Length: 427
Image (tube, rainbow, N blue to C red):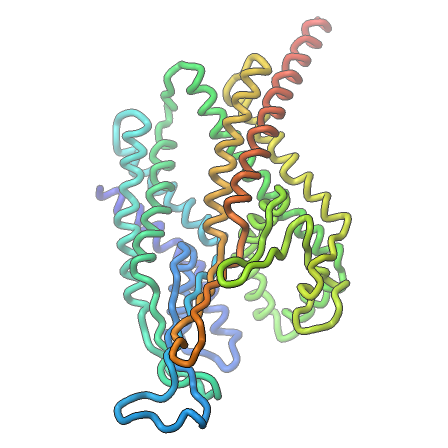
């Protein structure tokens, strides 16, 4: 247990460092400049957002002059609550990596099969979640609201304590268990056919998912480069007021780049990335796409014409196609498949693992904005979610993964058999 607690503390501190570094960069480039304590709080909130913890902002909405004077002992205006979940998956992936390493260290202290080592690794979750809960409690604070015609009174920032406990607990439990299982250096698997398929399928599913994210991100970068005017104007704008400001903006983009890669992957599968909740709209898919530089002028910019689908967008079909073939081939090799049927089975198992990873990434990549508290003056509570359509994305990932993975696995065995036959004939 001591090793698990030590590993949890190390993961917590190391994961907190980049969040604080980004917040300090924001502090240095902000105008007017915030205070150092405010910058540290921003870094703590960013770290909590690495774990998808929702943060509520409480203030009071200023009523117009016609509202009359407040009653004795009552504050004017109405309470307003804004709930935010800002996703920075680069930080989430860093946290997962750190906890996997902590779980691996805890697993090495236990002798026994993989599941026992996995349980030892999962014990990292309790101290890690306790640290995140303590941070969330420390980050509940009040701050003065600058003079403005909309809000007044103190601004209260309240991270959800329940979310600060449950999300880190769940993430760390899964990552720690995986690290504990990986700590078994001997990889003692029963010598049975199904264990070969599972072992190869897990490796292939992981490779399939990573290949999909990498190809999606490359595709997005290529697509952005195809709009040189937009890309050039953006880079010029962020560096216009100094190199440090530009580097800070790029660091923030790096934090959200994996989020965009997940969205691009699910859209490339045929899914939809958009808004759901109190209002619903599909923003990015093969049927709807922002117009970019071809959009007309207006307050909504590139989203004012969502029916403009450039033909080159369908090149994104190569993303899932290549990913599932790569993952299926990897699964067949890792499972030592000897026939095309065995290769297809291993590839199909990899497709199932790919769909589970895609589901987890889709959930973690969904951003949330909630507004409430104005019911007294007729304002309805609203909740918006920005991200992929999760049920459709899961089904599409399962279909692409199982079918494509099976084809990739069977094809890999066929190619290997052909090479062996050619070598035998040449000899």
